[in-house]
Structures are given as structure tokens and as C-alpha cells.
Image 1 (cartoon, rainbow, N blue to C red):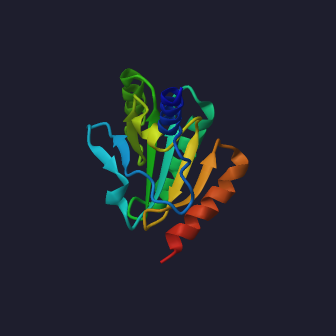
Image 2 (image 1 turned 60 degrees about the vertical axis):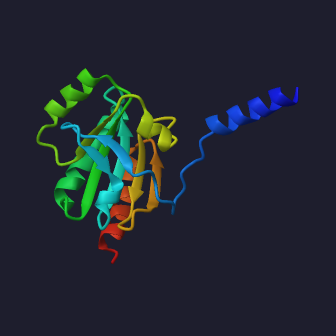
Length: 163
């Protein structure tokens, strides 16, 4: 009986992933881009980074990506890096969306097996993490709504203008 309880406890401890919190340094790996290059947060220090998880079947995700693309264009890649992590979709769907968004300024990455999502403890999408210039999470958002837009813009402006 003791062995059974120990095995169950071990399984539960391995299967329960801790929630990532504001102020923490999140996992660096954000998937691979369209060219197969690994995208790492650790290489973006000094910039504000938006890491958002999305899928083609998620209308709020697509709306959010459109908004983030506009913000990325206005702010520029020298101050802001938006990374949109495709959540558990087939390679062909990912390639189609990359082709449609070939002129996009945001960085699109691919996470077919959900490895990145698991590290970030993603249970639903859209899910956004706003990471400051030091590489720590400053804000997190679950879901997307038009009412959130002004708040997100204010958060980004505050982080971009901070020294």
C-alpha cells in the first residue's frame, strides 16, 4: 500500500505544472520560426517581448494577432518583439498561415507537440505574456477582448518607455 501511495504522489507531482507568475523569468525557448531557427527569449533582453499562444481555429486569437501586428509595426523591432506561438496545429496549417502573413512583422513560431505550451502551463488560448526588458514577466492575459486593448497598449508603453 505504501508503494502505491508513493507512486500516486510521484505521478501527481510530475503531472502538476506550477503556474508561471508575474516577476518570474519564463522559459526561454519559444519554438522554431518558419526557417527552423530556434527563438529564445534570452536573446531578446533589452526589448519588451509579447509571447502569445494562438491557433487558426481560434477567432479571438486571430483578432489579437492582427492587433499585435499593428502594434509591432508602430513600435518597431528595436524596442518590441511580438512572438506568436502556434498551439498544437499541423505543419500544413502553420505553413499556410505563414504564407498568408509573409509580410508580417511579428515572429511566428511553431509548437505542434505543445512543448512550449507545457512549459508555460497553457491550458487555453489565447494566452499572452508581456515580458520586460530584463526578461521577467510583467503582465499576463488570458483570452482576448476589445476592452483589453487600451490596457495592453498602456502596459506596453510603460515597459517600452521605462529605462
